[in-house]
Image (cartoon, rainbow, N blue to C red; front, side, top):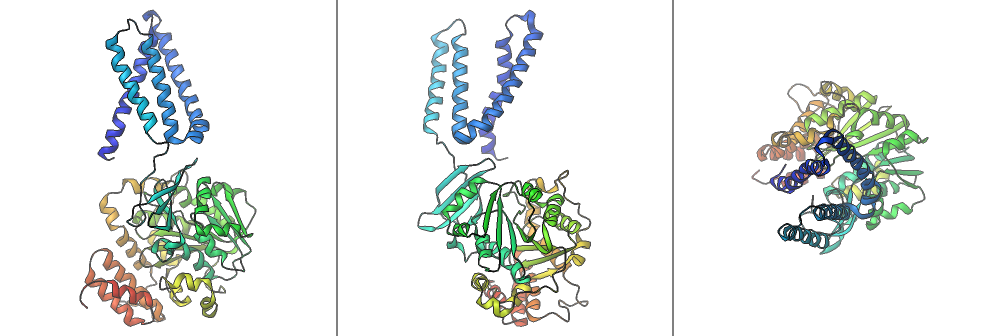
Length: 499
């Protein structure tokens, strides 16, 4: 906890701690009735706590928000304090002057302080942002921030942290994973007709899916009504007018339990970091089991995790997936995206997208800006399947609702663990690669894109630990292995230093 947090919380904590003993003393009166009076004080305190909590949840917070509700409670406490002082005897100016001064200060603060206090978790790519939407929902506070110099650049945040971006960011890494979540499954299996998005965000993933005319239904479940309200400020929200789209505001677990639909694709974006509190329930055995039950026979479940996720969390999540799904495949898109695809049946043998179709599809236009300009280049990002992954993560526990292992790990990890997170994940990916001959990097059957991709993973490992010489060496080798790999050329050209 920071010093500022301690300074902000300490006065109120001490005052609240003193309030009950003080109230008990005022309530006591006749010392001969000590026992009954103290018992009555406890009873009234508990009843007040119960009704206060209910009142805050169903009235104060929904109608007035945190700021407005706090003002009302402060005013009520101030009035109660003045009432108590007014009945104290004897009354004197010496007592009333400081009380009146404090009451005046409290009243002034109530008038001056804003109704809503914007949460400043992350800015919009190093620019000062204006708030154009602030709404406190039942689940979280949702805001939309806009770059005052470029109004098309907009970001949606939940509790101060970014979850969605406008189309003006489409050429950035922020949006890349949202697009890959939609296009990768469609490239792997062209039979997908019924999809479910767990989470709406700025609707970018849903919009990407809608570009496929063969998809018949596009369902989306979003837990936060405020997100559904805020998405109207983003260009991607036009997809909600598509008759195939069905948006449900509900908890994803409740939805999966009650739906009778079978989905060919379920997309879950419940990553695990301190910035994304509350996602542990969506990274658990029970959630995966419900998703598994709602998949069609050939259905795919896809999930994104940042490369910088803690090594323990990565292993727990992968082991939990392996305990539920017969087939688990891991893809890595340098430099920051680890995607897992789980299914009943293997990925091999599926009718995948052809190069000719890819060239004419929206996937080509969306992914080429990230140097993913062919089906071969995208498929080459495959790292390993369950037979290679499962033995490496078998020592990690399985996350369940009775033991939500990922609920607190991000918060208690020290800087050392976070500093090694990317490197540790890359080591896991290296170990999971299909084992090549001793002393080699490749398997004999690896094509050019697979070779350059494996070398790029090693270049990325050198980069994240600050060894630019190793990063340059493997990036140059990736270019030599496959001159047609644009990603390799871009990475090699972006690493500073002599060749």
